[in-house]
Length: 335
Ligand code: NAD
Ligand code: DAU
Image (tube, rainbow, N blue to C red; front, top):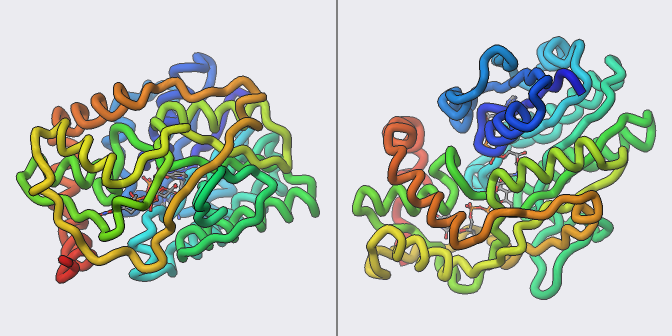
């Protein structure tokens, strides 16, 4: 592979993938294609080698724009999505446009251009919640919120496209991802940055029971790269961190690392339809030679330290669009 397009490359995981790819493959050229929604930020790409990187602003829901960006490229890796569950509960129109129509446009452009590899980054949330055990790739999709339903829709169209037209699509389903450059609407950066401002952390009531599997962002990037290069078209690969934690355990560790105690927890009304537990088995990707490398204790310590050291990155975000969203999302939810 000489040239790839990374859609959503100015977001959290997409930018980590761009950095990972440029560092790992010295002859590779990366084209980042991104709409720059509230979650996109060119500061996330501030360290990339510009001689091997091109940036195009555009929307994957615009067929001509994405077709143009894919011309001359060997592969496309799609991170572009609306990604926050709470925002999808407030309104999901953009989620359908990007996560379904946008994905369809990528598939159609890949068909027209004979693109060699198409990797769609998806999520463990498409399985829904599991009380015990872990999902494998052949388990049915049972998404339970508008975000995960839109991601499942994009997946179904992609698998049908492979079946009908032979489009060389691979899908990855990753766990909850953490690390530097994550928009502070997600639990980890939200809680760390609130505590830096001596504010409380809004834990959804029932948080002691909800469980997420935590995957370090560079491990997610390398897992996606493994599926892109070594996976088989038409196949799905789970990307797990093998680090399951109850939300209260995660919250207490963040409090400890930030020098706070549980008086900084504000219990708030639960998320409607809140999935209880996500858990996936990544044996299929392990068989291709991938394993997560980051140790949990080191990963969370480094992540907390990164946000503490990079206020210049998150302060403009928290003072910007985020402010209105936060008020709308959390007002009058105390329990
Ligand atoms: P993010 O919200 O940080 O970034 C999304 C990026 O996509 C932004 O740069 C945004 O500007 C861009 N974008 C949005 N709509 C677009 C459009 N129509 N056209 C072009 N660009 C557009 O997202 P993230 O957390 O990095 O997630 C990336 C991908 O990984 C998503 O597909 C998500 O579903 C998946 N995923 C995320 C997690 C997680 O824990 N964050 C876990 C598993 C899978
Ligand atoms: O599992 C993969 C998914 O992980 C990705 O597909 C999504 O894009 C990503 O947003 C993430 O979804 P979650 O809903 O699990 O992440 P979030 O950070 O929003 O919430 C994690 C847990 O923390 C969840 O149980 C809800 C809880 N929570 C979250 C927020 C934002 C709180 O208790 N308080 C909060 O303020």
